[in-house]
Length: 130
Image (cartoon, rainbow, N blue to C red):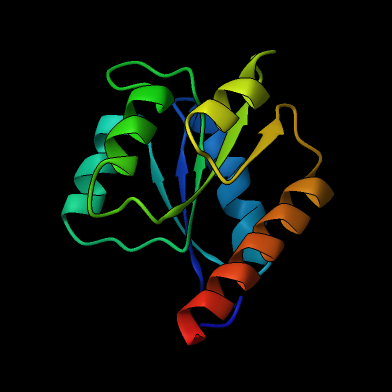
């Protein structure tokens, strides 16, 4: 899979953040899906969406990012690439504990976001080819 057309799932309870990230990532050639919380994201995975990468907020209602990631890592989706995207001060440590593939702090610079997404999509593409 090439970078262009890779599916990115944004999981964040802030509608404005989801819309802004969607607009920005689609402009770079990605297909973007979104979910308002971990439960919504889980339902989408169960329904067959296969994201190349998940951008995950930690603080959300219904099912927060921590519960979602724990459930994900103990399921058939365990190998999915997840980047935590959070404004919480302890997010980096929490992301490591939860075995996230990376962590970006909000507010995130768009260049940092794009560089991170591109890097992990490229890594995932190499694994898919191998």
